[in-house]
Length: 231
Image 1 (cartoon, rainbow, N blue to C red):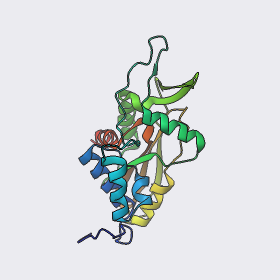
Image 2 (image 1 turned 60 degrees about the horizontal axis):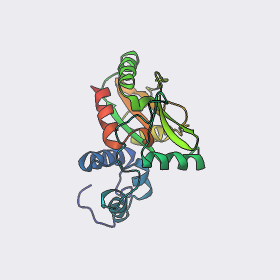
Image 3 (image 1 turned 60 degrees about the vertical axis):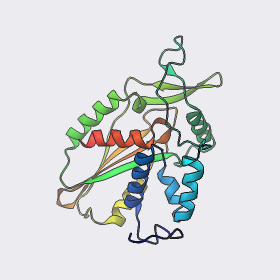
Image 4 (image 1 turned 90 degrees about the vertical axis):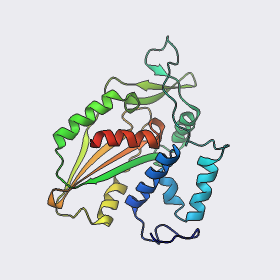
């Protein structure tokens, strides 16, 4: 972007959804926080975005959902497969009850691949990663006014495949529109709380895009999961 000013607007500078995603992923990795894509979308002005980061993520008093989800622990040996939840997870669950169609707490990550990706091989790799990661098989259930995580043995891991081979992967407006359409609202009481998309473009290029609810992942964990999938 060249020289930036505190009052600059990212989108007026020519940033797009892919650029925003890269900024979010970089900040999450550097500071071990969990900025959502929605944060940068609603505060594209650098001064506003910096103020949001300071208040919600970087200050010692920050209490928002940037707090990393703690390691899952047993809630009670009496309730099989039910686990305790963190305070941020409770907050997100109850906010979801107010607006089931909200995508405010969605996290997303994607990457272009300059080769054709085998849907079958990608499905095998994705199935294994989901099976190895309990958080990806998690949903939520309220019992007697107490919220629990429920870990499923198996969940639907269908990859959403779309053929756009008439389009160039360099058409950023087209790619951005595909990503925007792929952001999905989730029923937090029903796993899975994610969707993996594979888009095929002209000249055997591909684009992999993962959309997931923040209640089961933070930015750092999502990056690690996605990197494992890509390798």
